[in-house]
Image 1 (cartoon, each protein chain N blue to C red):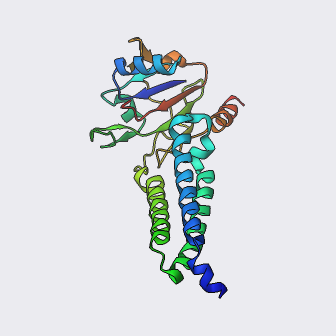
Image 2 (spheres, rainbow over the protein chains, first blue to last red):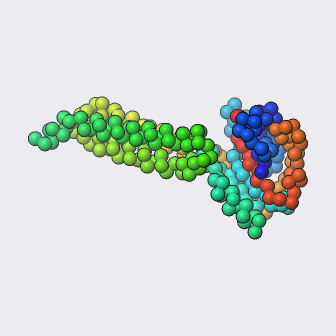
Image 3 (cartoon, helix red, strand yellow):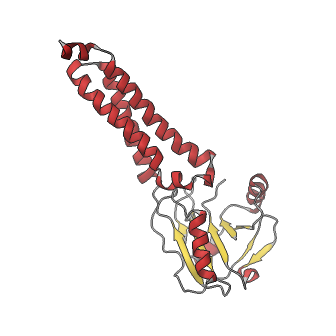
Length: 92
Length: 145
């Protein structure tokens, strides 16, 4: 698992420390990967800047996109069970 | 007469107060689930069903109160019921309008995921190829923490 966010490395380091996160949180301030994955939310940031849409993308071992969840409402996120079910299908 | 006693009793005010309390509890429950309990109650966060049960019950009590208040012209009971209605509307607007975002396609299912080279929280460069050979869940965050 890895996270992708526009925030700088320093912010992600603080977040990872405070939340005891042990997976990589990747900093994408120029939204290169976010654009490559078609997930730019224009003007979505609190300062009116562009950010990523809240989304989950599951890839198989070959780097093929097997499952995605892109929310239309930021309170709606896939549950751990949703992700585990998708992961089981990828492993089958 | 029984009807006159009902109108003059504090019953409608009690109904209104209970209704407003239930609506407030429903709204507070949602935000506690959202911010304090994080991902431990995803059902409450995603579907808000327990909150809506409380809010709906509160509105039903308020509706009973409105019937009595209309006959008795009880200002306080009417204000309490009106507050419940406004709070429930604001809650619905927040959940279904304020938090809505534009549609985004995301990557197509079956496509090859685009490569990237980004810095992790330790400043190390991480590439998609580093995860090759095992499934990878990429979670895109809105950030600004």
